[in-house]
Image: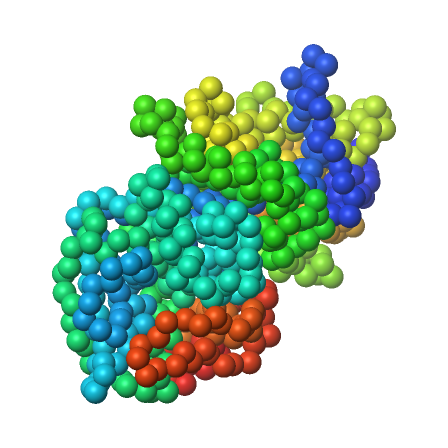
Amino acid sequence: MLRWVAMWCAVASLRAFQRPSHAAQVPLAAPNDHGDPLANWRLDEPPNVNSTDHLVFETVNSLLQHWPNTRMRTGHNIVPGMVPSGTLLYHGTWNQEIPAVPGWTALDPEHSIHFCRYTEGGDGCWHLTLITTQPLKVLYFDGSSAAKTFGTMDAQDLVAWGEIRPEWAFDELQRIKDLCTWGKEYGIDGFVRMEMAFEIMLCSFTSGVSVVSFLNIAEPRHDTICRPQCMFEIMNAGSWHNRYPGETRIRLDVSSLVSFYDTDLVPSLVSARFGQERWDHRLQNISKEDTTRVTARLRETLTRTVHHASSGIDWMALIRVIVDRYSERLEFTQYLINSTDNADPKSLIDHANKTQTQLRTMLRPYMLSSLALPSLSKSIVEETGTAALNWARPVFKLCATTHIHGLQDSVITDSESLLLNAVRETTREICRVVTSMWSSGVLAGLDEHLGGGDSELDIEITRALMTKWKQDLDGLMQWLDWNAWVKCRPACGPEEMCYLTTWPVGFPRPGPPPNLPVPPGRQPQPPKMEPADDWERPQPRCVGRIEPYSGM
């Protein structure tokens, strides 16, 4: 009887658990438990196709990390932050004058040196090093927000000008001037962005900073000598901040985050994103009403008093706990399933047992001693494939709610409500899929702790189950799209670096640059290069660390 139920569930639920197509909109179920505390914990209810909770979760998880913001370059978050006292900032220029107007500073000297220009009548360049003498109030735009390419500056445009102006992508002087003018009301000292590495658009070179040194350093006079090595070293410096915790010299206040994935704040982008892959998400179709709401929310967060600042919940730590808990385990479980030889019965049974062990391990903290299989009566057999797994719903609920227990009563800001929903719905979907996979394995006789392992497994049942498991897990990991899983396979050698196509190398120009100010007697030399095959959807690859930097 056990095998009959397992076979029926494995086959019948292939469709029952199938994730809805992006072409079909599915409404969220109304919360109505009809007296059943588990009524809202169905194992066959995936997220609404318009849900962005998982996108909020992963973009927050990726803040100030170079790798994910290079891969998904169009930013969707604006986050207030602070640069601590004692932080070094760097600025490359062509003369020995402290800028009297807003300008750009790098957090790594490899980045700023690239913008040095030789002095008239000699070699070398002027390199200014500053140190912060007090905490600087900054605003961070995520994504590759300093890259002059398609969509990367949308959020800045909306803040500075109230509309998106792609034709102004290269008008950086006007951009920094208008951003600093806008931010003056809120005491903002600068704006954090990212391209090859992280930078701060500093509104004043004399307020909150002092000069450490202003040196005329030796640099090759001709770009043809310096460009390949300089470009690589900037990207190498950026790669130091690839993964969590990312750029640690910026301290963000995520409880004041403003997200364009907030569907309550920015509903006009829901239909604009519908059916699109995440790579293609832009802000260009935002309505004027939503733009007004975003700027009002920014004003609210930037003027909030300390007394009403936030709940004190460490949202970044909470999100990292969930990523750390599931990231490697889901990846390893996927490896076990994908490395199975379905034609070899021994490999099939071995990998099925190992997969079941991984699933059980993820759920072990949520399995009560009272948990038991239902009686395998005819009524159970006649239930639908998903209903036959209803006995596992208590595990699903505990798994999905433990990390957020009681937090609803603590949140203060709208941003915290958004973060709570992101954590809740992301965790819910992970737990839903893992619980359904594990409980299907139990019914197939794979779990020796719950009635399995006492008889020989049926090959066809196991093969059907592995097919379903692969479908469920691949769908979950595609939906989550965690950047932790984007890596070079196999790992790069000691003379290589794992790399994603990074602006400006391998990118087409979005349009002709305006007349930018340049040193006397020098003309701007925009990079001329063929677009990389993957510039729209960067894929990890190993590139050489030494000339000729093969693969870049």
